[in-house]
Length: 169
Image (cartoon, rainbow, N blue to C red; front, top):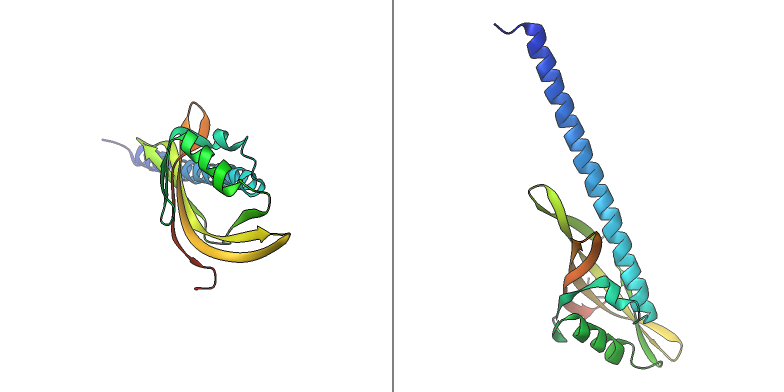
């Protein structure tokens, strides 16, 4: 017969284990969120500056980009080419992107409890910069899939959708 002290010790251990597991999961999620938000901010800083030389570090070779107005682009070369030609093709016209505060969320992607990627989604606004003047242009939603491969985070899938005027809310 198991003694009451033994049962209490087992229950205490199980409660401690559950507490530690929850604490580890919460810390892990906080670290993941901080990492993805940081990577995302680095990408958008390069985007806003048209730093096309640094773009490849942010994408997988088989990246897929789906845009509800501009169509689909497959592959790293296509993404970089489009950004150089369209977004950064002239010094007289630029776009600046800004996330809508409070809208951005990060969700882990796991396999057997191991994080292999993350989804980041939210809303963002775009400003057109022409002749030294900036004006608010539009609002859209975004969803990016970041994958962790060989210790490096890169975007593999990008969705940009529900584009419309910035004042539609």
